[in-house]
Image (tube, rainbow, N blue to C red; front, top):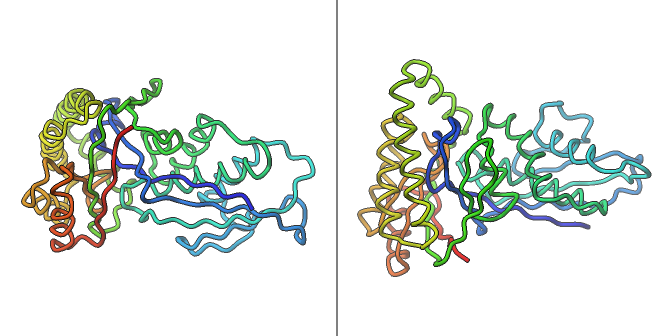
Length: 312
């Protein structure tokens, strides 16, 4: 058996505006991950692939799934990149601790885990760049017009400063800092939130472009704060970013309640992360306040709250 993992991801700054050419900063979230196990099936016809995913309830042969099924797409695309000669039948089993439709990169993580596991099992491990490219193609099924940030940060497993269409800029974090993630429990498909912002942009491009510019400026100011682990500066910028996202219409009562709870319990700053409307919020905190803030998030209705560290 060959096993491969891929972490979740959180956008610290810049969601939605990144789709329109502004920068964003995202980080991997190792405490949650997708896992793909690949084993040979010598009793099955050569070249056949059986897919099983607990999260989606999938148990099917590859060629029996619809062509636009994300699991079929990433598996077939990965196989197409590898030599085909004499390939045995394979079984791929996918598990994930990343909640679906929550802004934490579940779809991209599953794609990355599958691409890694299949290519490693067949003795032709793909580079991070190749895996990211394959995962981005699948992201189009999930999100319609993805920015590419999910597949990038998950494939490279490093904090990144990302501008669509430009070379990746890994961020070196000199001093680590703590981020808490609180799950509203409200499913929030990214494609839905992206489409909502698109409609607003089409209705009033000038106003939306102004908001995107404000977010872009926040992201540029946030980069040195991320690199230095300056919690107070990061918190202030998160609060600014959340104010703009709320004006864009992608916050929600559930997100607002968790954000207020985190700030009330001593977080330096808090905002939604990902598409919004539901899903998850993040808060930057000092270590001495982390436990109290997690308790506050759970009391405010979070279905789950946990910490991750960003740093060297």
